[in-house]
Length: 384
Image (cartoon, rainbow, N blue to C red):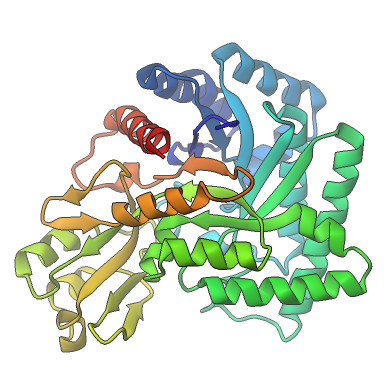
């Protein structure tokens, strides 16, 4: 790997510059110490924090120095959550503002300026972002045009930043269940529209260079997509995978088993959205926007009779099982193998942001848990 394996710091609350500095000097340093090898940090800075640090070059330089002092590299940011990702209730609010909103463009622009100033390694950075908007939310009739216009403007900004700093910063749009871009076919279709619009505007090359995909392994596994096929389809469509979120979902292999469903009910919590899908033996897939205790404990017949369920709840990537529950770790292994066939190396980032809400996990276990995930993932990559 040209780039060290990274983990996303959205697992740690970050509400101020002081929080950011603490994450770098304490949490991230501790994770690296427990790993015993050099790691990257995929920083998450909410709008209130990036607004403070990105517009003051002195502060930016201090953050870069803090990273260097700890021996940490940063080449990727998570610019998906705009607000407080550790508030009491996040759920569908994580998709606001969407990509038709000028605040989303302004926020992502600040993130790109900050990353270009601190990026280390190969002078390339990636920024993951939401898949345009939440499908269940109301969109204006001109939503698509406004979103595409803003993405094209960002591509122009990133091109200018490249010329000013020498660093290439790439946006990575992250498909997610129940969002406007959730499946690989939907993602490919959108990029065809984006490229056609950009070509007509005379900036097709800029858009192709600077805008691609963040492939979240958990998200596509929840959709019951085959990782080998999905990654091959993106490659065939010439859509660059700029970043990969290394993540696993919960898998319920026996929906008719009451003990397994009781175990699953413990994962129904009030902070994050846990989109839930069930596949029948004939290939039919049904879904709910969120996991509830009612669904787990008393599912309708068509859910109980399904072949298996998958739930968008990021669980430790080193775990094959969680008691009576399975995980989609086999899909992660297939994805890493498929990614190894690409002619370039996406940034790889472990993103188990759910440690603070995992059943039975104490707050002190987060650092050790993240280190175990990074070690297990590195072992998989070495095996490739």
